[in-house]
Image (tube, rainbow, N blue to C red; front, top):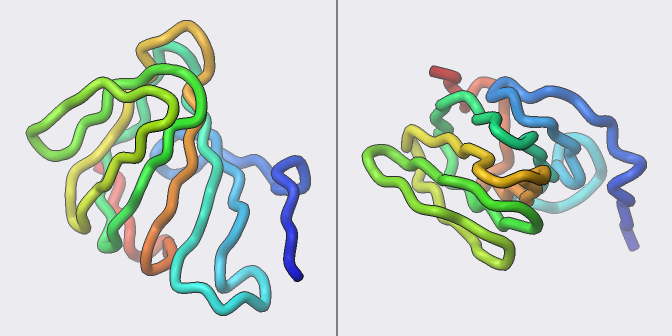
Length: 119
């Protein structure tokens, strides 16, 4: 059995300027996974940097309110919603609320630095 506690994950600033904690990644533990799972935070009034991934990604919104931008579309997002981001899509998210915007990021296949372009 493998259990990882969020408080035990190192916090860092990702290339897109989100505050990130990586929970699961096949390269960082002996896990038979295709995907990676991270916990992200965007502070009130801030926006992640526009970026593109070679992989598909899903955001699952936990807390706060955001405006999600994917290519030429935008939509308001809130807790309980999942957002699918197709591979090679320009994406970013803005915190439009008064509290931290918190969400999970699932990247499949697993996130790799060489698969991301920050615009």
